[in-house]
Length: 212
Length: 164
Image 1 (cartoon, rainbow over the protein chains, first blue to last red):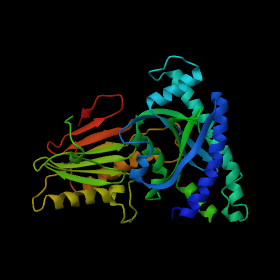
Image 2 (cartoon, chains in turn brown, orange; image 1 turned 30 degrees about the vertical axis):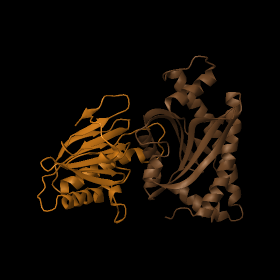
Image 3 (cartoon, rainbow over the protein chains, first blue to last red; image 1 turned 90 degrees about the vertical axis):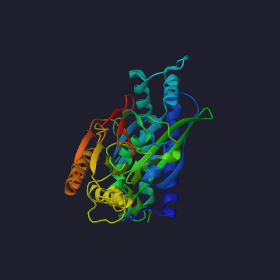
Image 4 (cartoon, helix red, strand yellow; image 1 turned 120 degrees about the horizontal axis):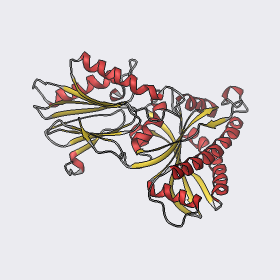
């Protein structure tokens, strides 16, 4: 099974920008303030590079991971360090004093945010992907199915351990991993939250065929 | 843990293999993958493989990625490093966590078990006894192997490190 060439990566980046745009809109509504999600990089990385997408391997990070089912399968990861994740919760919970630890309310807030951003992103991708292959029915990614994230699961663990799980589904077939990394801004200020989309091996192959 | 400079330690990435002799340490971060540490305490010789998949299915690239190729390759590299000395090897293994049971929609979570079985078979085939295991659970692990002592430390986020 082959990986994607530079032209296919470029096409895919444009498609993912639609997803990021919809996610921006959803996040703005959810937070009731100006928010943006944008694609920072879409690259095929070695395992070593992929497991360091979120920083040094033994950095402790928090993440909300969602499986993606339907037309595309794989994983979405909404990740942040403790301080950045808790600041998101403080925004949502309108707290004036910064939270210092993760409790039920905080993890719930993070997971709900992941759900909202993830659904918006995937809905947009599900609309845009079939258009790419429309001229050639054999190239179409299954457009009859919606793309739906599973309920998120919250985790606090080593960055490399979290990433390892998500890239494992490509590792079965490839020696490199496609990772779409998105960055965030709130009120025009960058925040240290990251959204990763990692299609599994079969979806990656479908994308490759669709993009020609 | 001893405070070491960067050159005294190697981070063993996913699917990679590393060996060391006399001093320093090897370190890897594990989720559902298996870390295979093989050592000869007498010679202060250690090797570490970060096994991703159980079976190479005949593939000859990325030897460290598969249990059936990683273990023989690790032993080959250790034998080369030891030059003519006869090795007395033992192994310790860690990892194989089931980290996201609620959201896994494929066989990703069962890969940990398959890796463990394949690693144990590969070690058994080479007659290398497994002296300790730190496997399963639902959290990632940091695995650190010390060349001078052959000791292995396992750290889970939020818990004290343990020696196996």
